[in-house]
Image (cartoon, rainbow, N blue to C red; front, side, top):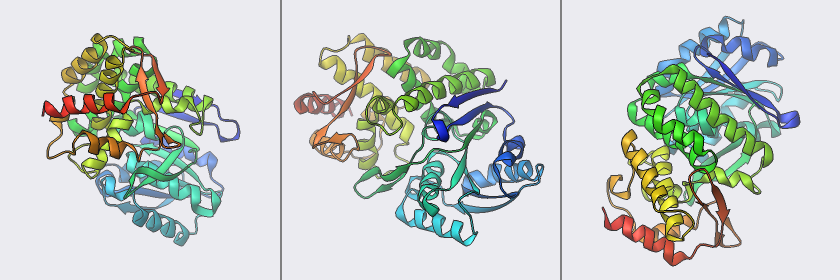
Length: 370
């Protein structure tokens, strides 16, 4: 029960291997890449407690030594402070350009380590070992790396493709239910943006996947990665089609900034709420039927995901305050905010032709329901 998705980017091409038991075989996959049998692993403390020893055994079985750096968990680790720490530590370990750094963890670790590798010696190779569902289906694939700043999320970063991704679906069993469901927000996004049949498949099978069905998990991760790989191959540096992957993210990033990138709202939860708001906005603009946002929200509720702004604990800015936070989004071009909207399930597109008053009305109605 193992699948491989190839990301064909010429000299930057790589494989995403998906399935159970990959951690134990990590050394077998990584060894052919190494000029010397040694890697540096960067992880975070919660992941290290669960998986670092298994990775060390997997590397040792192939005769590979490793050194490891453990960082604090949480979104706040994606910062200038920890970027500097990781980069300095890798230099202290005398990591050379031809060496390999392993990012063991979720999206925070993958984004941070990828950025450090992008700037270290003007480019060091790295391998992604994503341990969360969100990282396996989204952040580990495609080469977007970065950190958060005081002004917003992922505003400092670089495009730096991994050399290999090992998505061990056994790792998903260690996730708390909330973390798994947050990752599912990104899985669902793929069906909504470009594959209506996949969304229908998720409506039928996602409950079994969440309950632990390994085959369903492998299938869902594979299809998500296939869709992302296809879009990344067409538009590696987000000049056009790749922006489709940000469905729900314009709203999400504003909500994350409003909640201080805290445990009040996980990224995938924000994506789920954002997808619902994007479809509601699409319906208000006459782009899709009202049945589409209702169907999206019904599926979110059926999965037990956060669905509405009322599901976000604590205070939020008013509608204009949230719109101002959207103005810091990376999708702002020449001062104009681009939105990813939809003409229906599986039919997303990018547009800047969105009246701000309509966005504010959607947000005001959502806030009024809190």
